[in-house]
Length: 272
Length: 321
Image (cartoon, rainbow over all chains, first blue to last red; front, side, top):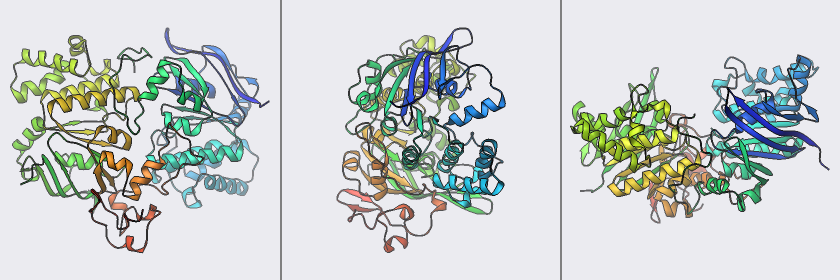
């Protein structure tokens, strides 16, 4: 029986009075598992990611990570403990790094906060981590603006895995990357999972990427889970019309764009 | 002599960087026939957007544009301000990636759609309004009258991109330059917007240059595809044959490194390194440092486009791959 690391139960998030972003979403993530959360814009997938990290407070439902229910405000010791359980990589590596912080310091700051290491040990460990994501000592003294988008995303990944979390949430982490760089990062993520047994919650709109990176998937529309299952099965034999429509819209050999009927997410024009 | 609508011949674009010049587009030659759809595919920094903008002389301030650009027999680079304006307003239209950044946020959709018709085509305001509503219906927006009174912030990205397409149709241009028109949209919306663009373009016999990073999207909607890298075209082929037999190692690399919904690779085959812009590329073939097929002959000079079994490819070792 594999250990369940993340358990989300009946998650709900309401913004303002009646803007229901997430409604009754439940899922589990086992140790070493990669779960994809698939959906279009406005489906609530990013809100789910933010709630997992404690960046948003759920209106209803519970989240437990590593067997402990996440509840209420946390003191600094509790926050550090939570940080070692779950980390996140955001979509935009341009805005998620401090423009004035050297790459080596980005990694070392996290290490200093979580591990009792000497300065030398910390530096060595930071270089190890940079190497693990395909960067070198040369990059440690650079600033984020001196790196390409793909390199920055590697730094964001190195920073996230520096504290050795059990779960890594990746929110559209490869969406902004060039095709050739996207493939490199996907392979890197697969390597890290194989090596460390880390679990992923992979938030994405891209079904081809999801197929490559995840074992199981949930499909979200208008804040609700419309379908779930092993990724391969879900993509080969989708049951719900919404999942079928998503799949049909993916360009591939022999595909032709098609006009469709109104979106099943039912989001009215004008909502962002 | 040629019946091409658009001819690009050895087009080069440099932008000033301090005392130096930085090359963004390097000797690009490409033709588009009337009614033809050509995909210009490449990664960031490849120069694909700058090539499209050069057609309308929309290069960044201070840029140096050289070579020959001919539209319907007229040399674009020699046009005076008046003729250039006529070209931009009536003959060639552009669709941008982010409609929100290119549609005036304080004017209504109706104002946006009728402006060009009233000012450039001298259509009476009332008729322009009626035509705009019909165009909205053509792009799949049924409640046109209501939309005409709305402002951009009231419309979703997908709807706004359709408004942008309607505005292009309003002037019935001969050529549409579509710069990543669906990149910011959801996949289901992308499918719909591309279908609309495709249908209407064919109905009206408009040619299109589709700029995209998505090779599969280009293959599905274009007649021919040109693959760009570091400011140069590395390969041109019909869309059909390109996806079956890519000739350039870079095209092959792009195709195999993209994950698929039909199969899972244990590790994706990758192109090592990162894409470079023209001014960053060293001597020899710009793709050579990332190429698995590269040999010593790849280090001398940029390989020119040459014909190979119906395709055009800029690789000295294309026969071997």
